[in-house]
Image 1 (cartoon, rainbow, N blue to C red):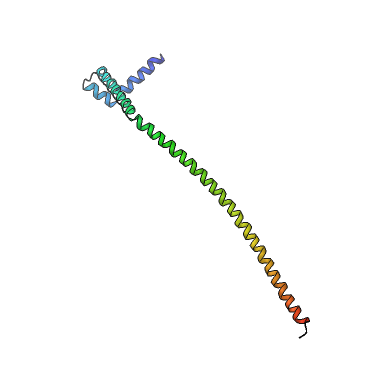
Image 2: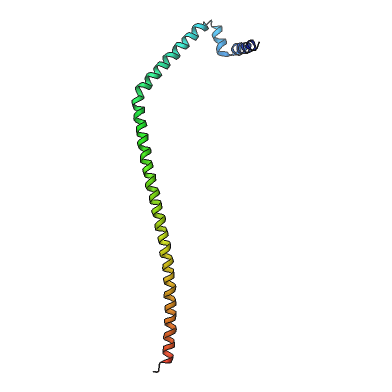
Length: 128
């Protein structure tokens, strides 16, 4: 019963389809048309397989080129990661040098301040 309901539904859809209606009105032999379509599909399939076989060398070449590109990109990534690590090290060194420079500047200012104070003190205690 389920099969007959599906079959009836299919028949109704086909009956209402404009393309099928036009074929039936023109008296087209649907079995012959179906065989023709099957034959054309087989021919297209065979042609597609021939095209694929004919292009297979190019597909293999393309695959090899893609693998080569992947390898090159992997090496470049590795180099860039190394460069990034080097820059990180340089950045840390620059920060250390800046910190040391600030420390030396503070020491220099302190020495100059002490020197100025010592000079003033010496000028006052030394007799002319």
